[in-house]
Length: 296
Ligand SMILES: [Zn+2]
Image (cartoon, rainbow, N blue to C red):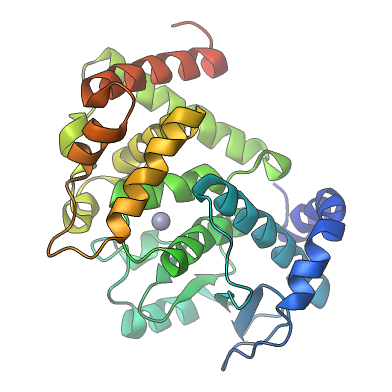
């Protein structure tokens, strides 16, 4: 099992090529103060019983900088030069647990036990909260997952919950930092998706797209996250689909008395409508699973 040090060392080697591209962007953000958090890069850190050497801080800035660029490309925006991602890291689970117990509300994982959580993003406090992790290889993926929420919630005032989570899963396993654990997780996601497809147990697409955050959180995350990820992938897979994705995100930003009907929006803007999207989604799962796992 890799240690954080080994993983970050490896990331550093990979990230070295990114550094030149990131430098100007990072230094442009150096002057913005973020009370309670320190750092001079894109990410600002609050550390509790946790030592983050400058070299590792720089590496996190690099991978989150890369993450931000991927979101900018996917959603056609340019982040404000003042954008920061605030990350609070605890050195112990107990420190994390007691902080979360008193500070965690209006966040995404209300219905889950805190012991199941590697971290969370608080929209109220606009910060990612995590801890060192029992399995240190989780830390980088967890930071990326929660930083995806931080980036999206600073850019957009409202999003469908499946899109928020599907996007975070999609961007938290970049190919350049994938390890054996990530490969296994990827194979498991394709395996369960194909099994649900074959057994006729995929959720009804219209109902799934329209789940409220509260309804979504009541479902099993072992099901909702892979399903959200597969739908997000389909929408990222062609320029036409990506246009539909961006149109619905734009629709969510319009002031309205109630949350938009996401399924109806996709019925209107997905090429061929929702019936075609449902068909394409099933084909996408069958093909993606066959590519990675081989024929059934
Ligand atoms: Zn999440």
